[in-house]
Length: 206
Image (tube, rainbow, N blue to C red):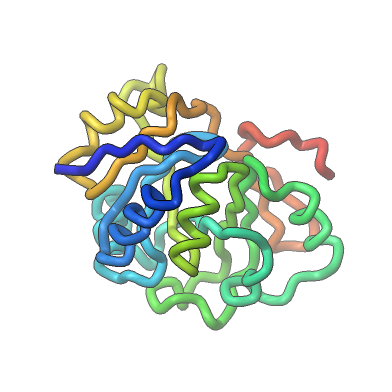
């Protein structure tokens, strides 16, 4: 059964963050807060954990569209091909924030994603998510947790999330109620930006 731990976003306790990172390094799955909806995540470098997430989402790992949660834009070249100045300016303006940017994938992508032409990059405006990635030392992959009830779509109450997910993951973070608006998804892999999904992030950044 999953561990259920309280972490406050204003001032995340480093000991609690270290506990989360330990779970990730051991190949565990976590449910954690972002600046939009709660996400299901694991260490990007742990193949068994990645395969578990893919099974839960009922997708093939190689064809999955998981986002990469990054601490900032400093190690972008590890996952993304060189981008032009105008694209980088959009990223700088929007991040950290409630956006997922689809960018051309680099040759150095982790093995399961080698054949992917594009990757989704997220730098959420959430101290807990950023501290986890910072302590881990590399991105985590992330996918939103949908609710079966179409009216709700996204579960926002961490206690309800725990009840539903406690047998599927190793750890659930309670950071208070989450948002029920997903990130805005923008494809920057072509010459012109394409709005894939309008979510919480404003389109006025363009």
